[in-house]
Amino acid sequence: MATLTEVPVRAARAGTPPPRRRAGRTLRRLPVRILVGLLVVAELYPLVWLVLGSFKTQDEFFSKPTWALPESFNLDNYTEAWAAGGLGRNVLNSVLVTVPALAFMIVLGVAAAFALEVMVWKGRGTVLLTFVAGIMIPGQMILVPLFTVYFQAGLTNTLWPLIITYTVMGLPLTVFLMAAYLRAIPREIFESAAVDGAGMLRGFVSIAVPMMRNAIVTVALVEFFSVWNDLLIALTFTTRDELATVQVGLLQFSDEYGSTQYGPLFAAISINVLGILVLYLFLNRQIMAGLAAGSVKG
Image (cartoon, rainbow, N blue to C red; front, side, top):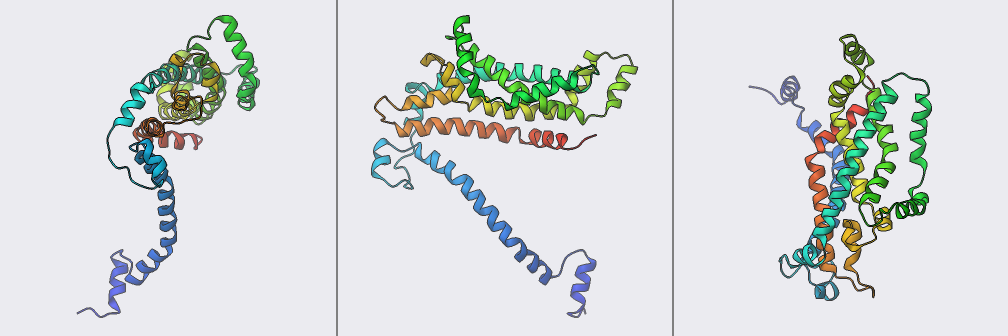
């Protein structure tokens, strides 16, 4: 029969810490767990408050406390926001702007980064610094000249000013990040492909792009958030309500006298936020893999 002094010894041999050690470890981790719990509550509370507010009527916003639950959970606010508020049209415009801008940004950015990092030619360091310098130029400084150019070119009543502006403003960061990811790929891989007869185009399509898949997804999602959530550029180049994106469309829930329909506004914001959150959760694994790939140099 085992004695009391033999229990910790057997527990240690079995790989299980004794009760006192487990209790001490739990107490040491308790402040960290409390802090993490508070951070989770601080992150989730605004989202829960937003979703609950999307079910309230206009009278509930003025007569009830802000933390009060809605009297009913109907979808009237969502229907009004999507149809009467024009949110469906705004979402379509945002998609028509974001998808081409991201496509141009990724294709041109990855190709430029490959030419700057893998291909050897005179002056590539200066060109890379020129791209990096574009990150430091504030976008607000070039809006008025761009609007003048788009107006003279007859593009102001289309979505092309948004697509072109987002592509050009996102290229410096895309090239810089893609070059950093390409720097982590061993050069011996491209040299072996060249020995086997592969040209630069084949090396780019068959080697560089597949190896950078997670990095491309990460950069594309970062640029997606930047384009989708933009208000200043979209508000500057949007000349008609039919061309308004999501962020510009949210301003239409307030009239010229300052009256705001809070229920439909909260419903529209909830659709926007929850849609982006679902996209991020769906691509979370690729994002983490891309970040890890960019932090290690091969």
